[in-house]
Each structure stands twice: as C-alpha cells, then as structure tokens.
Length: 414
Image (cartoon, rainbow, N blue to C red):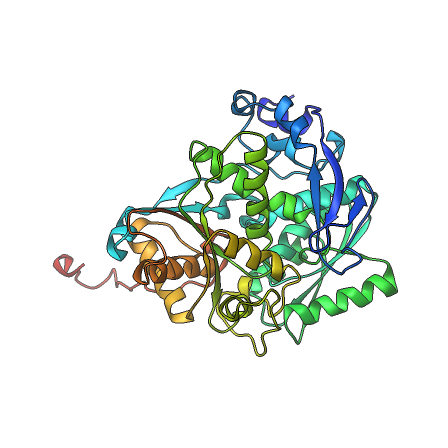
C-alpha cells in the first residue's frame, strides 16, 4: 500500500442522505441513478452534516494526503472500490505580486487548476461523476464539450472501463479533440455550439441508452467541483478570501464552491464570512451578465456566441439561476470582458509573474482589473482568480527570434 494513496484505499464513513431539486426542494432517493429533477433542474446532493461534524476534525484532515479524496466524508462515493483516480492532487495558490501592483491591487492569488490530471479543473467534476456512475452501474456515457471536459471524461471513462461518446463544436481546439480520441473516446466534431452538441447527446440517450454527462444534468460533477472551495478554505487557514473570480460557462464550479462554503460552516470549519463571487464571461458570450444586469433569475440563450475563451462559450446554462443566486447572495457581480483584454492578461501575467494562464484564466484577471477600477472590490482586499487549465493546452504566439551561428554575432544587441 502506498502512503500517498491512503485516501483512495481507506474505507471511511459516508453521510449522503438524499438528493434535492435545486429549484423546488423536492427530495430524491440517494444511491439511485438520476439526471435532472422532475422540474428539469439540477439535483443537489445533501449530507447529514451533523454526522460529518461529529466525525471529521481539522486535525484528522491535516494528517491525510493532499488530494481531492481527503474530503471523503463530504463526497458521495460510498464504496472505496468504486473510486476512479488519476492522481487528483491539491492545486497550489500562486501569488501574483507584480501583476497586483501593476493593476493597483495588493493581495492577488491564482489557484492553478492546470496541475490536475488532463491539465484542467474539469478533472475534479468528472472524476466524481465517473466514480458515481461506476458505483451505480453505468457502462456507456456521452457528453457535449468545448474541449477540456471531454478530455477529462475520456480519461476517467478509460480508467473505469466505460464506453464514452463525445461531441464538440467543430472549432474546438485541436489539442483537445486529439486528446479525447487518444484516451479512447469516440469524438465527433459538430457544426454548432455546445448546446447543439448537447441536443445530439439528448437524442442519443433516447436512441442508444447513453447516460447523459452534460453539465449539471447529473448530480455529481458539482460534488467534485466543490472541492475547489473546500481546498481553498483550508489553504487560507479557514479564512475565505474577500473575492473570487471564476470563469463561468456552465458554472458548475461556482455553484459547487458556494455549496462547499455552506457545508463547511455547518460542520464548524469556517464562520459566516463569504467572498464576493464574480462570474466572469466574455463579451461575445455573456448570458449570465445580461441576466444579472436585467435583474432576472433565468438567462436567455446567447445567440452567435464568439470568444477566444472556448471554455466559457456556453450560450445557455441549465444552472443559470444557481449561478445568479450565488453572485447576488455574495454581493458579487457578473462581469464581461473583451477578447483583447483576455489576450493581454494572458501575456502580461506570464511576463510579470511567470504563470501561463489559459484564456479563461486570463478572463478572470481582466475582470479583476475591472472590479478594481470600478470599486467593486477594495484595493487592499484579497482576491483569488481561478486559472482553470494549463496555458500549454492553447496556441501561443511565436515571439522567438533567429540567429545565424555562421555569421558574426553582435552580443551587445542580444
């Protein structure tokens, strides 16, 4: 037995009581296969938090290996043997002091999710969803993707021995499409957006019996993604930051973190303080921003969506009301930024602080700058940006120069 694998091999008590419709509160039985609720909305996993509080201590937690599975008491997988893992280690918080100073801030951190398996935060949600699918007897899964989620599903489905079928927009980054195929999934390019791909998946569920792994259409991706919030709280000494900037397409992580903070308070690990939650979108696809500004609960589909940040090019999100609820309850905001600002942010952080952001991560920095300039957060407040994938998965501008080794070299000019 490997010491670093103890969280994957040690049986621990589980506390799931039931599932609950996020809109109506209707209860659903645990340990059964579910998609959306009868109201067509996401289901949320509920726990006996009094039981967790009596069982899990900060001291016990601190003795466990630093990975996603250290939070077993707050996760849905019952049987240890059903855990599917590729090594989901905790991701670091990277200080960005030069970037903060340049923008007029003081305390800026990036949680670098690109260190996870398949180099994106999608690994958190999909490892939990696939593990639960295995526990509940699923053998065939299907999903629409803008790239990174499909790669994570393909990888974990391969580990679990499941058949996976994945549909992506035709302009999905080439590295993602090839990554998905390399890990054994059948991947199809579709002449449309991610919700068009989702419609094909929905039809395949009826025709072929696939289980639908679309964002929030099964209950367990939220539980994987909420570990970002659990992890963040522990890394900051159980004191949440003043603001979180999160790249928001389907919004699973934002919803999950908001759920995590509530659960942490109820088990006595944190107090009532909450960060302002900023849902960050691109100007070319900003349904949450429009709904936030209009003061409505549900977001209309965004037509002709365009942005270089493919991960947040989601015209219609099934969890729209949950995203907006978290933003409003936290006194945060939904902010849209331009593609030019995204590209500049990626370039500048790499040069200033050595961290290569993905475009979606660049969007969070552009939104942070806007929040500072507009007084949405104080310049001395501590903010956390989520860099949701490794910048190495995206095309980089060639800024190299050439040198002729046979010609005289002017070293003073180098």
